[in-house]
Length: 225
Image (cartoon, rainbow, N blue to C red):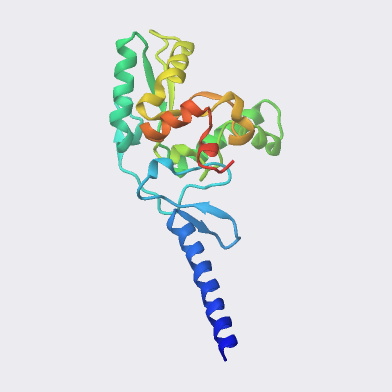
């Protein structure tokens, strides 16, 4: 009887441990899809660290409050104060940037991809090859950071600054304001996206500083490479 009791208790402990492990993963922002693939869901405490790439889609039900910029582009309201401060400091140093692209809806991202595919087709590529080429620089709808509202494409005001001036300043200073260069030149195999010196992602000042000084990309920082 004692032996059976010990076996019963042991089995119960194993079940409890297994449940605890599952709870720990799901509570931390992970969910298991019906296909068994691990996908990220929004982390209420740190939404700015939500990972979106070819393997991690925009979380279902993701919603974000938006702020409209003077040129009509929109960004998540949570990043606006730091973005504005960064731009003010750049302009004070004689460098003039602007946000070329901010938040995009799923429909807009689909149109961006279709336009890029059409552009390659006009050069003589087949539709399948045109799509392959387009996806090297345009994210599949549902896997674009622009759909989070946390990413911005920053270009130069050509009348007053050059792209090189803007990109050099951002590469050196953006982390101080909570932004990271999302697709570095030496991380393309990890990010799956070609080098984009204009694409910056808001992750918050603490994480941005750690990422900048470690030389990691976001996937490496989150342990998802």
